Each structure stands twice: as structure tokens, then as C-alpha cells.
Image (cartoon, rainbow, N blue to C red):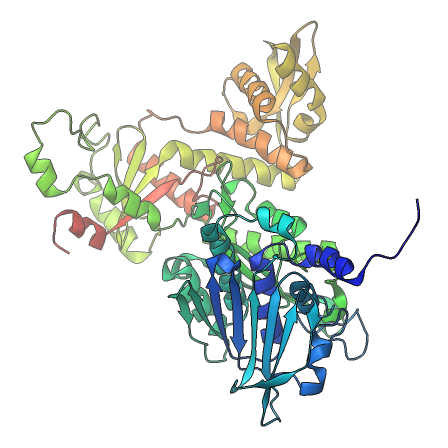
Length: 592
């Protein structure tokens, strides 16, 4: 076969396929150009999800007339003044965006350079253009992209519906707005205004206001604020700041995860994995944390030239950044202790029948009330009826407890307590499950796992697959206090167990552990494997549902929850408590 050079237009179309995947890809590049041009206002117009039109206007510095044709020439850029790829101070730097977009569309550039009295325009048709001509634009630059991918029909066929493509564009705009709080964004689609985000006043709180405006006050008011530094080298620091959601504020997808490195939106599996690792066993299976995090590092510490869409990065020291992320998030989550989100309270309120419905349907068996099958009588007497009422009240008045003071046990599974804001309902089994897990984790981390030799070793029969899973992980189990050996066909023998297990059913723990590992498998990380096994064991060791607790036991459980990291969630990520404020309660009785 003869080797030949490809035509220039085909080269451009191939290159465009790497940079411009869909309308949102083109929009991202155009917005980044506006940001690099020091714009403080960016207006976006879409038609048919960006397939027919993408228009981006800004009030930036513009382009000089003589340089306009150069702007659509491949690998021509103003953003590498020193030709140094090790120190990139702009979002763009390759000089590929405009040429790539122009190669597969009808593109028009209108621009007015800051020091010029005249605006100029250039039309580009599938990479070909004529002369620059005068324009009536008053300020900045406006780039219009029409008939995207008309020159590459195959790519056009793979696009989603207009509504889906519009939603992708919408997400890009929101992410750029989060990263640039001092820039205003206006978004119009098919003649209808979708967004109008005003620029924030430049100060230390500008990003906080922008997060509140975009992600909602419900997130920003309840999320945990993060700010931390780590020295990279002398006089150079890596900084992380932003917000992370409480573990109980989780989603079933990645849509509410926003990570920015030096102002650049990043989708990096390694960094996302580090953030998820920081949450460890506080999230339900299949759920993802919500966060908006910003990381700033010196430009020469990072390589952004590793992905065509510039959505992945590499650091000189990946371990240092991972340590910064995991350490910062873990520390703040531990500080939060038993805190949960108020959306749980709102969900709880929905499940209560209001007074009118309860009255009108009290005889209607088909409309079950919340209390229909419950044990309405408290399992212990209310605090106010106890002889030590004065002591408890005095203690409560002297020191504020977030989880309050126990009033009663409901249905032999839920503790009802009172704090200064209202009442708190605690799931005693879920809460104690977490407390046991954290004790076991702490003992292991401090290398102080106490073992208990069984007087009569426990012989356990297992099915072939669970047996294989247990025997393959004998070393892991030794690390947390189990001494297990193979014992004939289909059996193992347990000789020592962690002392923290106490009088739990050893045989059942091993059987359930084998079944769970067989079904779900073990994660790749060693620590994650340990956490999963410890969580399974803690579930068996915890206070079971249906066990009556006296007042002292309930209050001891609440106090330990307040001292224990991650006690707002059980080992499976479910909430351990729900708070109902006085205002919430008054709503139930139409008093609010």
C-alpha cells in the first residue's frame, strides 16, 4: 500500500473528532476562550440543542484584526507566550478549539479589540474562509457556530435528542459558572431564557455565594465547608477548599459532583476515587457523595496536557494530592460526628398524616396511620416521671447535647430524645452498629486488637464458594483478630476471635460473612476490604432491634454517638437519627 499525506480538510476533521465530541464540547471550548479573554459577562444562545446554533458572546479583550485569520489556524495560540508547557496559566493552550470547530461547521467570528475603534468579522465554512470584513459588534467577541457536524454527517447521527444535548450544555455552563464566580452567565435556548447568573463581587466569599446560587441554599447551608493547605515545596502550597455534603446527602449518580483544579473542571477517576475513599463506609451501596471542591496548585506542579478535552490531569506527586483530599474530607466528616441532613426530617414529616386526614380517616382501615401497628406505649417511662428528673434536667440545662436527653424507647427499636431544637429519633441498632465498627477500626489502627481464645473452637460448615472466599482471606481476618484454619472438607475451625465480639454467635458471623463476600465480592483496596469485613461483624455485635433499654443505657448510647466519628450513618450508609425541630412539629398541628 502506498503511504500518502492526507488532505488538509480531512486532517482537520479527524483532529476535530478528538476535541469536539458534541455541542457541549464546542460550547466548553468557546466559554474557556471567553474566560481567558478576561470576560466578566458571557452570554450563550443555543438552537436545537446546539445542533443548529451555538452562540457565545463576551465582553473580553477581543482579537486584533490582523490576528483574526490566525485564530482559526491549527496550533496558533496566544496562551503560551514562553512556549512552556510546564507552566500553563490559561484554560486553553493548544490552539485547537476554534480550528476544530470551524472544520466541521459554519463558523462566524465577530470581535472588537480593546484598543480598536472598529469591530471585524470573519466567516469560516468547513475550514475555508475569505477576507475579514467590518462588523457592528460593540465590545468583546461573539462566535457563532451553525450546522455543527454538517461536514461530518456520521458524527451528527450519533448525537442524542435536542433536549439531551441541551442538558449537557446546561451542565457545562453551570460548571463554568461555579469555577468563575466573578463572571456573569446568561443562557438562552430556543428563544427561552434558562439562566441569568449575575457576577459576584470579588472577595473571599464570592465562591460561597456562587455555590449557594447554583447548587441551592439547601446544599450550601448544610454542607461541610473545607479549607486546608499542604506544602509542596518551599513557599509553594497546594490548597483545597469548597463544600462536601454530609453522607446522608447522597445521589444515585455523579451529577452533583464538581471538582476543579486551578479553575479547570476535572473528571478524573483517581481523584474521584480519593474523594469516595474519604467517605469510606458512610455511604449506602450504589450512592455517591455530593461535593463542590476547588484545588489550587502551582502551574508547574500539574500537567493538563494528558487528555484532548483537558478533563484529566497529572500531578508531580499524586500521593501528596490524594493525601490532601482524603485527609481534609475525613477530618471534616469526623468533626461532624452524628450530624445528618434536614431532608431526612422533611421525608419523615411527609409520612405523618396531618390532623385533618387523621380525623377523617380514623375509621378507614385502608388508610393506615403511622402509629397503626406501632407500640405506642413507651418501653420506659418518660424522663419527667423518673425520680431523678431534677438531676437529668439540671444536666441537660448545664451542657448542650446535640442528640439531647433520652425521653423514651419506641417499639423497642427507636430512642426518642429531646434537645434544645426539638426531638430526635434514633435507630438504636443502626447507631450501635456504627459505634462497634468504629471501636474495631480504632483498635486495628492502633494495633491493639485484643483476641479471645475460644475454650471450645467453633467448627463451621460452609458451602464451596463461601468456604473459598473465607480461606482466601484468612490473612485479612487475622489482621482484625480472627484465627481461622481449614478443617477437613467443607469446614473451617475458628480458634480465636476479637474480644470486642463478646458473646456474639461466632458460627453465624462466619456463615454470613462468607455469604456476603460471595454475593458482593471484595473491593480491591486492602483498607476497603477490612472495612467491609468489620462492618459485617459489627452488625452482629450491635444492640439488636427489639431489645429494651433503660434510661441510662439510652443516654450512654447517645453520648457515645456524639463522641464517635461517622455516627450519623450505620455501616451500610443509612441514617442513624432524624431530627424534628419545634417548627416541624408545629407544622404537624397547623400551628406554623
